[in-house]
Image (cartoon, rainbow, N blue to C red; front, side, top):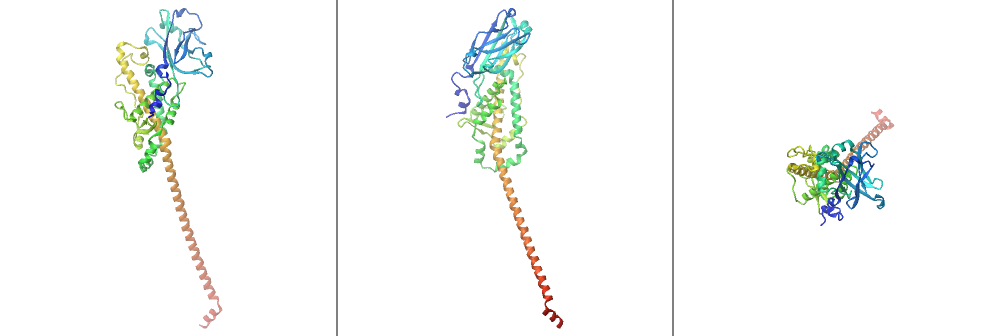
Length: 430
């Protein structure tokens, strides 16, 4: 039986396309960096995701002065087949004597013939490079490259696990802000449920259980998943890969909950929708009115509340450098909380998107159709009442006209009797 996991997860990906197999690292040591007078330097080629790459460095800057310029380039791009493109997220770092002070930059780019190199003209000031980043006259540059085989028809796993853990500590706040804005915007679109709460509740309760299930159970998942990817996957936004991973984890969690497997972290809100793996569909996990109640809650995405604060040096960019041994436990705790938070953001965003879709495409359409039918019935009843009133008025006018004509005839008859000669003579004789 085909499961939605087989639709969403890596099991359907072509051989060798798991994110971990499309991720690679490269280290380049440039000796005697301060003495180099060349305009540009190229590293040896390295392979990631079956593609060959190299790093391009401009010690004095590319089209700028007194800056170190760094670029990731596709090797032998002019020999590739026409129409080629490589989509990748990558991080380039210049290592400092103190690893925690190393300079990191991340970006996401689709490489093609016209844009076969991508990076930063002003990666950092040259004075800073010579001041603390040159160790024994050598400059150490590290690169991490994640090739992404994008499938924009659904959320998908983008990142190698280690690379994701590194990025999530840096960009989790950005991902949370993005998901929060999205959920609030979708809630605003469903504000009609609060404005018309009484009417919607009365209509919903009037439906049979079979009709309710037809509207809220086994809603085809294809349009929802495609809409999710279209909503969140932005090739120009560095956090897109993390958001895709979050949505992917959210779908996995909802699918497990739909099968009755796995649980939620302590304090988590029960899901409003679940994924049915057998039919690759979405279904309400609660009654529609209970879902409306959750949508009206103050916080759809609860604020992140760490169990305990991290010690100094265990936050942010310092985690990218590896940190110290005494911080390893704090690092593990931080990473576990980050991964759990990322999955929670993904699950609640998937739920909100699915709810908005089901309410808009299923429930609102049926409710508006019901309202239209009620209005039509009311109009028909009003027209019938108006017709009956008009008929009654016409009948009254007709009766009044008949009575008026009858009285007129009587007056005319009485007048004729008075003018009749025989009647006059009879009156004289009397």
